[in-house]
Image 1 (cartoon, rainbow, N blue to C red):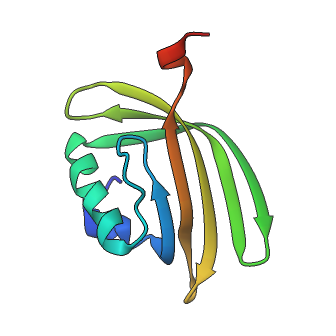
Image 2: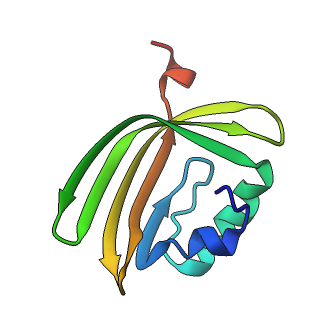
Length: 111
C-alpha cells in the first residue's frame, strides 16, 4: 500500500485470487477488479498497522488472520478491521490468493 501504486499492489495477488474488501460490496476475482479497487482505496493514502496476527504455515501456502488498523493519510480517519490472507507460492513468488477484510462489528453494533 505504501507504494500508492494500484498496479504494484494488484500484482501481489495470485492469478486466481479473490479479494473481499472492507469498503466495497463487489467481490474482486481477477486482476482488473483487484486493481480497480486499489485505484480508489489508495487515494485515501492508507497506512496499515497489524494489531494481532495468527499465522499458520503449510506446504506452498500460508494463512495470516488477525486485526489491523488503517490510518487514512488523506483525512486522518482510523478504521480497525479483521482480516484473513491466504498466500500461495506461485511462479517462484509468494502471492495473495485470498484476502478478506471487514470493519470491526463493534464499531456499528456496540460491545
